[in-house]
Image (tube, rainbow, N blue to C red; front, side, top):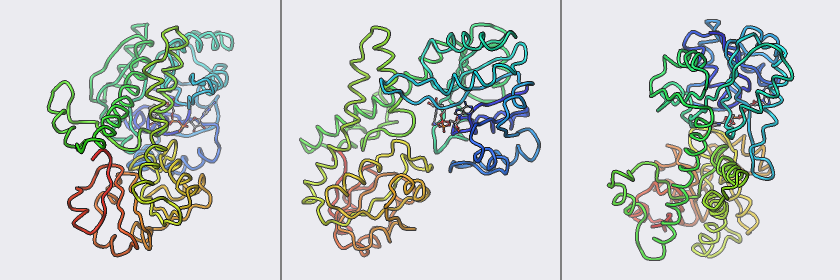
Length: 427
Ligand code: NAD
């Protein structure tokens, strides 16, 4: 099949790699020239495990090409996958301007019968808007569909190759059939539903996961008031099969490019259709306040931040990525600095990306150098390297002994035995 993926960001470039791996002829198209130049040479625009290997093997066998040219990429495409960004607008609704701009650009080159599948996260009702727009720009018949994406940055290639499920939202049985064929090599349940259900399934999944994080943070707050350990609570609570042990992350709240915006967008959508926004807006508000609350709590525990040297370990929004979008470090470091602390930071992959945003940030090439002379070490991200630190080496490097584990990755007894004062979350 001839497939064109529009937008070569995290989702687009991974999708293009996966569809080309399965023998389709794939174009990845973007409007950012340097990104496309890099991709043509097999260079991923960001760090993602396994991505460059995936791209390079398809570039080599000729199944994958990258271009900025709409006519080249669209004229033979059987399936056009829209994977451009959909940030939240100022009122919280999904801003569809990149989706519409892409449609305006490709409409004149559509081949009759082409399927326009929206992979970007968009609210129900978007397909009708896209159809109306395309009809003003082309006379050829086309179809629309929804292909929501569930991959996670940091394991995006693996998730895309081994998805838990593939969701195909289409009304026309022929379209469903063709999209099933395109996804046939992938394992995982194929769920064929309407575009509206597909789009709701994406927002619901993200809002539910975000809600789990917010929920356990509320429970962690209570544990701190009564001497319970939230990790023990999770162990006990998670034995209930309706609840499970997985996906409980007490900590700094959720970040990244998806959960914050998707919760906001679901709240705005709920408001727009007259259902109010109670639960979704509350999740968003609690998450928004989470870091300020924790910074104040830690400040009280360490005797204030003024003149403290603080080693901040982990800058990206999660492990195995250099993506800084909505990373907790972007709130925490300015808050620490504003309160009078000197910050020295380290991330295995995101030092450079962080410095683009936090311009005067002092970073180091390893965690122990970041901790040299510090009174406090604070772990923000559970990179494998940062959850297996040599505690005696860290202690020897530091001037003080405060160890803040915002991911609850260490055994408090072991950390205390190494001479630290341990501060975790909800324990
Ligand atoms: P991104 O910002 O990394 O990439 C978007 C790309 O689209 C950019 O390279 C941009 O240059 C390009 N673009 C913008 N307008 C264009 C146009 N008119 N023509 C061609 N290219 C254009 O975004 P992302 O993180 O890959 O997310 C894309 C969509 O997928 C969003 O709707 C997001 O919510 C959704 N999603 C993201 C993830 C994730 O983990 N990042 C997971 C699931 C779903």
